[in-house]
Length: 284
Ligand SMILES: C[S@@+](CC[C@H](N)C(=O)[O-])C[C@H]1O[C@@H](n2cnc3c(N)ncnc32)[C@H](O)[C@@H]1O
Image (cartoon, rainbow, N blue to C red):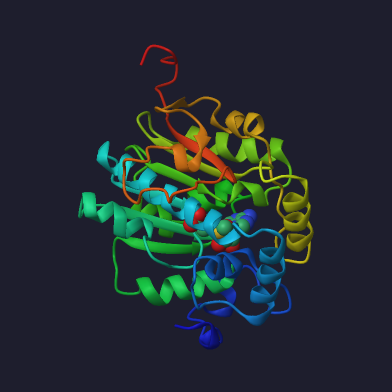
């Protein structure tokens, strides 16, 4: 389904939690445009092009984030995890979580979660025939609603290890304390041996870039709050970071595919961490 077909929304009106707003740029459609996709509108492209004039590396930073997502999923699937909850999943594009995880195991099951109705509509159209992947239109700010959603509980057995992905979504939660509480709510539901994946935009690009991005997203459906690495690393509390720890994304296992591009940037920061058994911290 292309952007022009948005009105062919397969969701019944009662199923939709938010309405299409085509007067404001949306982070999901802007990100689609950063990555060279076609599921975006004039309002998204205009906002992105205005930022791009000030931030030449803008599109590369999105590719760096997406490549990290791919490496992290390949790594976690390689540790034997077969269930994935992808929070703030974005519009289907190249290297979707289920595609990468299934390269490692055909048994991989994926629940995509996003609060953007265009993402939900596209995802449902794409995944209609697929019994081991689904998308739910939910807000990350309401973790209980996500964890209790029958579409999730049908596919994900929380007694088994699961990978919970917060890739380029926590910077849309302006209150850092609240973001940390959301992560802890998921932690409580995750079996020992589960994995947490976080990627987060930083302020490393400098004051002008940060203020340009902040102002642009003030006109969008979600505002952005870029954070420093010291703030982002706290989101891993209660988890054991795997090597090399929390780093700028191109430096996270660059030997895994998709490899980082030459001349990496420090725009995004994050890592992968394992949930230990309660009482087992430091002994694993
Ligand atoms: C920059 S995209 C990241 C997509 C994908 N995770 C990736 O990294 O390739 C951010 C996504 O998060 C979604 N999002 C933002 N705030 C959200 C929220 N409160 N609840 C659920 N999804 C949210 C947006 O709609 C968008 O699709």
